[in-house]
Image (tube, rainbow, N blue to C red):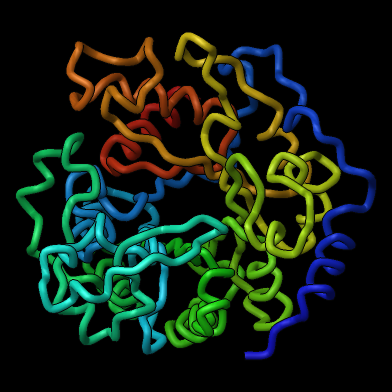
Length: 379
C-alpha cells in the first residue's frame, strides 16, 4: 500500500493540528461548576458502546460477548482489530494473545513464543503476526481478568477468535433480529507496529467497511485509533467517509513518537488543536479521568473543560472505560469490601453523562443502558 513518507506525514500533521502555538498545561481550565450544572446534549441521545462486547460477562472480543451486549441494548459493539500473518483482520485487544487465548497451553505453538517491540517497549509472548488465520482459529478465547471476573471464566475455551468479517456479519444479523440498528465501533490497534510488520490495517478496514455498505457519514459506525497518522490516512488516502475518533490517554501517540514529533496527547487536546483536528476527525475518545479526574483520595473530582472544548470544535466525546466492579470505581461509589463486587456504577455513569458527553464505553452494557435511561428521564 502506498504510504506517505515519515517526513511528509509529520509535516502534514503539524500543519493540520498546529495553527497556533500549542500550550502544555492542563487539557483545559477546570470547570468550577458541579456536574449537574454542565450542559446536557439532549438533541441526540448518548450512545452506549459495548467495550469489547459484554466483556464484564463473557471473554472479551468473542461473538458471544458482542451478541450478549447487543441483546442487552448496547447501541454499538466494539472490536479491536489486529492482523494475522496472512493479512486477515481479527478481533483481539492486542497483537500479543497469551492473556486472551489458550495459546500458552498449546504445545504445538510453544516455539512461537518470542519478544517483539510494541510502541517502543519489549513484549514477550505469542503474536497474531506469527499465526495464519487457520492456526488462530484452532485457539480458544479466555477471560482476561480472571481474578476480577471469576464467573466469566466458566466460558473459557468455548469461543473462537472472530474475524472482522464475522463481526460485521453478526452486526447485520442482530440488526435484523432486534429490529433496530446495531452499530460497530472498530479500533485499529498499534498501526505503527503492523506497518513495520508489513501488515497494513487501514486498507483492509476501508475495504471491509465498503463491502458491508457502511462507508457513509450517517452509517452506524465509528473508526477509532490512539494514533493520528492512520486516521489521516483513512480519510485522505483511502477516502473513507465514516466518522473517525481519536483516542486520548496519557503520554503521546506512538506514530508521533516514532517520527520524533514531541507533541503529547495533552498538547493535541488543547482547544486550538481540537479545532484544527476537527477538519479531519469527528470525535475524541478520552480516558474518563480526562473528563472528570479523581482526587488524591480516590474520590470523583470536578469536570474539566475538555467536553466543552471538544464540542466547541464540533467533536463528539466518548470516554472510556466504565466498569461496574468496586476495584474500578471512585472510592465513594464502592459497595462493601469485595473488590470484585458491583458498586454504584449507575451513579458514576449518570454523573459523567451530565457533563454533556455524547456516549460512553462500558464493560457491562446493561449498566450503561440503565444509566442512559436514568439520565434521559431526568433531563
